[in-house]
Image (cartoon, rainbow, N blue to C red; front, side):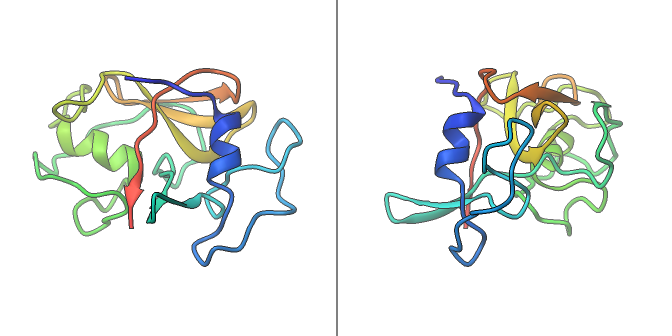
Length: 147
């Protein structure tokens, strides 16, 4: 049940899919960091990714749930959800058409994404289907995509 700030994540998830390190793309704090492209790492021998927030619209605010049902989504699987992917697909897969999209055994809270935002990085509030813009020093939960 630990939280972390995004500055820690920027130091871990600093490679693209092919393992090339980000050496040029900076975030809102002018430091090199995590982006939708540079969001991969290998932890304990397992390749993982920090998910994007999962919407083509780069705006903060509430999202509308879809009627995709209560299928078990996987991060990045657009065959399950044609509107959202990554964190928002997880939220949408568990919300029905309501707002609480917290999967079983997950915290009904905020989860960091790799997606840069005006003040740092976007995070998704799973209980309410809201995308926030947060400073990288804020504390949120993390979910990872196992590749």
